[in-house]
Image (cartoon, rainbow, N blue to C red; front, side, top):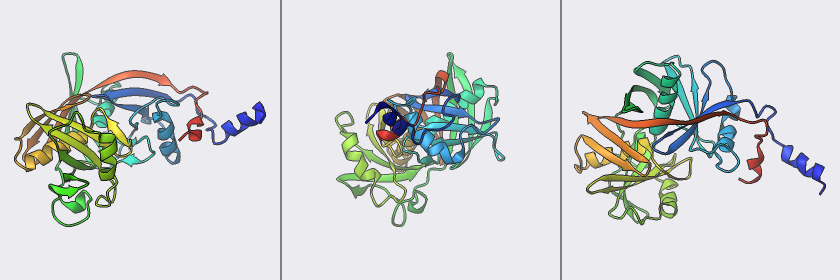
Length: 300
């Protein structure tokens, strides 16, 4: 094959205007996101958002991230958030992601200390502040849903300590569906091998994130995320799910300090409503180069 022919093959499927898109990279406890600001105009057409996320999130051929956040105006709240994951799917909600969006909006002067964000999981209220120079956001996570129809999960009633794939599994929806498993040995678990069987179980029609929890001197959580299809350093909705299940079973009280691999989160309950406090930080901002093409379509 001639060099010119090879170049033509690589050009197939390329976007005509791949460069010139501004982005900001942020992270919340190591859960990292690429944010595209569409407050003033649509930057990436809706039909292209899934494939754009697949390519941008690739850690070798793109920017690298656990998802792409699109910030846009809302008719129902102060802002709107959409999250597209590395596999191109759109998530209803993301606890760490919404804190990153809040950090960007706060820095940009779009919001005050209290505001609301529209998500596919509903309107989310936030309060932001700085502690010791670090940005923190308090996110009202709403009522964890234990009913199978709302998770969703096959069957009737609640999904608590059910046998599945050799584990006792509980499930709850905290914006997205989560499976929760309590274990005494969190360090040596091969999550990448074990979690996919539960994540893809026929009991979860829309799939589920899978959380492994150790309750001891500290409340430790590791999460395998649907859409990322791997373990992330932290999952906000997952940490809320673990605390909610543990509280439901009488293992913890109304305040749970969670240690994820990427850092701390504070989960509190007011009645049955959950709140999450956690940090977020800007990593860098940039502009996609004109050389950024759809080359990764050749390797996925």
